[in-house]
Figure (cartoon, rainbow, N blue to C red):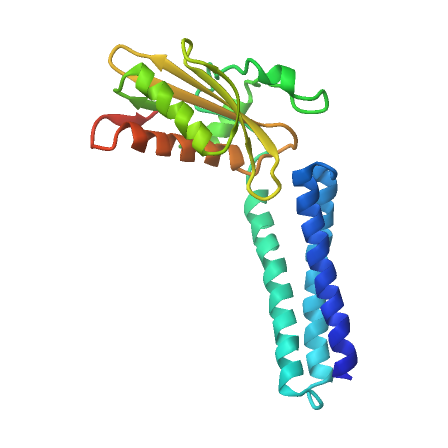
Length: 252
């Protein structure tokens, strides 16, 4: 019986993989809406869990007639389907604990303003108006998202911020060296969803302050992507601006 069951399990495993690939690639290319892709992925997780159970049942039914090669195949299919489903379940559990927030900024009182992004975003996407109620939510869930304060030259700070933006592979939308503003679009690692970013560099008496804002174009929650992007970018920028120990702080 194992010779009949094995091809079925193989085909089911390939189907799960193909649907997952189409869902992710479809969003990145742009011919599948993110909501549709998420639904497809959710169904592949259910299918993978069912395939894991089916594989275990098949092993039990065919335990007497299974040769070593068939047994290894059953084990391989079971492991792949279980790991795939467990990975997405773990991600869902982690992300579900985060708030419905898609606009993160280092300055919640006077957030950096998008200039050109307003003309790029579609009517169906989020607007770029920062809502006051988001400030308290951000402070609760992302208290470590803070501006970068560093005592370097304003021009140096702007040049390094612009260079790092390009190195990240973000799509540079606009740059205003005189005003210390940089606008760009970043994409999420898996689905390639577009998140817009604005950097604001301002002069202080003896230092330079770098604020950053990152906003998703769609979805109720960014699942922590924007906060992580800001922390990572400003952390790397701090290292570039201050390779030697000196006064570099992240603060409100």
